[in-house]
Amino acid sequence: MGGADARIVRNTALVILALVALRLVAAAFTPITFDEAYYWMWSKNLAGGYYDHPPMVAYVIRAGTLIAGDTELGVRLVSILLALPMSYAIYRSAAILFGGARVAATSAILLNVTMMASVGTLIVTPDAPLLVASSFVLFFLAKVLETGRGVWWLAVGAAVGAALLSKYTAMFFGAAILIWLAAVPKMRRWFLSPWPYLGGLVALALFSPVILWNADHQWVSFVKQLGRARIEDFRPVFIAELIPTQIAFATPLVFILGAMGLHALTWRRAGALASRVLIETLFWTIVAYFVWHSLHARVEANWFAPVYPPFVVAAAAAANLVQWKPRARRLVDFCLRWAAPTGIVMFAALILQANTGWLSGYRRDATVRSVGVGWRELASGIEAARVRAGATCVLTPDYGTTGWLAFYLPRGTCVVQQNQRIRWVNMPEPDPKLLAGKLIYVDELRPDGHPALNDLFAQMTQVAQLQRKRGPLVVETYAVDLLEGARGDVLDRSPPPELLP
Image (cartoon, rainbow, N blue to C red; front, side, top):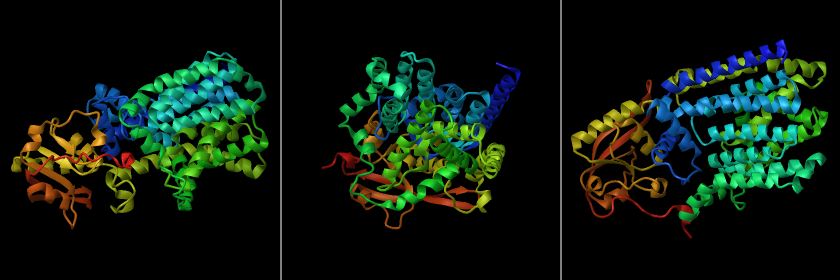
């Protein structure tokens, strides 16, 4: 490695370490989201699968809380640190596929300044480990191409297996790899080799706990996730959301570079055929599915996580390898110069807004419902009401409220979602003694009350109304109701809708 390349590697490492440190600071003081609280509860009861997703997010959170405790930072610690091996995988992938330290460094930095990576590793969802695993899928496929050694297919299988343990979206890697092998003449020999099939067996072995869990639970998780977009539900309105949300998640300048890179790979033939086709198949196979999905149901912006590794490599190729005409060259140079500062400013603004609401003048915005600002204070008021009433357990109507209360109430407090019991099938059932006495029910204040609970309990008395606030903004008002005299099983054990005829 020459002196110039060594400087590029050193500077890239310092930039990525600084970005990871910034996320760790933000993680420590940003309240957890309701999804994170839910997955944190999973992490206390590890299993081969869960109603909503495979188990990798629970493993990641469990590892972090073993190090930093049951805190906001503990929940997020390992997810954020995984950006380091992710960055290495992207750096090496780009270096192998398109050559040169500059392309590699650009790829690693561009990925880290996207909101998909910065916020996506800070807010721990299944997409965080999926993004990391997807980076290694690309890296190990690049090693197959570089070395021609079949043993690297075992590593590909391990990375795909880790991706499948993160989210079912990873199943599209199989189709993308097959298309790549078929489309590149020199790669077709692998169809006659045992190595890709052995790699597939590795992926299947890693994914087998999820299959076994589903087999024991009437395949409920597969039915729930794989049946999201039914072909009869044709509603193309959602497709209009795809590009705006991805411009935001990629950040605008990285999005422009990525779009130019994909164009250059296809029409300008930038790079070797096998490298170009690998990037294109990993990107377009998954994008094609989500376009189809968006014709039937909403596609959340974070679902595109697995396409970001090839996308940023395409962006780096556009910035460093393509001979653009002067006007396009100026655009590329502008985007490359300002992509990192723009991404950092967007990240800092989002964290500031989520915690304070200051940028919107304390009005509502998209973060106010999901980020748990005000829950620590709200939980203190709920605990005081529970103690005054002499209640032994807190009932809730949804998994988000359950997770937030379990996280912010004193440890060991009985908190139980009254319905949707399939979500908690991996957890021990609550002690019947705690459900036999007085209970409190916590839900947003509703004008029509809770008729079903009125039928289930002899007496239901509102004992408090409490507000969750972000600064001067009242986010929600919660009613705390005292429940007495249960007339039957307190918990609604109806089967999930996915299992109904």
